[in-house]
Image (tube, rainbow over all chains, first blue to last red; front, side, top):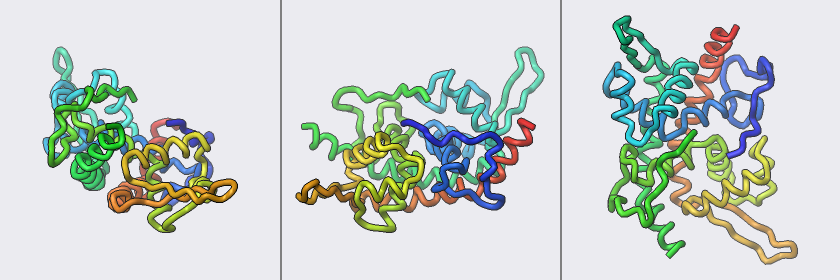
Length: 133
Length: 133
């Protein structure tokens, strides 16, 4: 979907204590779009359950994700301080990913949303089939 | 982000009772991407609090949304049976939107995610500024 909420430089209207999704200048709305995706929901759940994982293992446990999208998603999560990357200086280097405490705090709200989607998907899907059939 | 999860015709692998976000063929993952957006988070909260609203009022209470994106978002919510549209046969016709019980059930998980984003946005934003400064 179109995004009209790009931040002004230095985003001067950022409140000090708390964000406001309904304020167009507030970075909360872009943050919500970054974390409210299926890929983030899967990666956060997997890392919350497994602790530290290597890239290839994370890719295997996120069925359907491409290498490009996985790399982009991991980088975005790292930039949001939700994930840390540990490089082991082997040849070739082994890269390990794990959640930060902030990333762990996202697991519960995402689990609620995932649970809602998994619970109601069959009902919603039946409506689609009725509407199209 | 790239989406490799388009549904096969008739999506034959839909489980009868419950979805699975980790199954690439399952419509749950597309559903999660549809409902996990900032616009849906705002529209569901506004309708959950206000009951039935007209298009113009909904647009006013969703600051920053364009007419095109609002229309697309409302149509997607209606197709997912989360929202109903009531047309009053006045001239011009008045269109009223309200949540279905299914739409109401989405309010709580989205409120958790919105609350997480609003609470942690300042901390995440500080990390961005430190990283870029």
